[in-house]
Image (cartoon, rainbow, N blue to C red; front, side):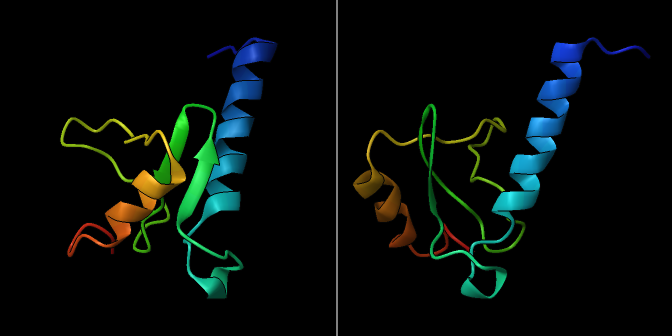
Length: 79
């Protein structure tokens, strides 16, 4: 498999984001589970360090930080 420069760059950036986000607990060096991304605000899972996804597997983006924080208050939505 051959990758062009742009494809390689995207792969590296994706891996760097996954490594830098990690779990959102304070022990991993993060101050919270809400992160700002280009498309909006996301909630990061404490279990796997990934952004929460909907049933179809797409990342759930919120328009405001307050909307994302509201997810943390829903029982069972953030683990």
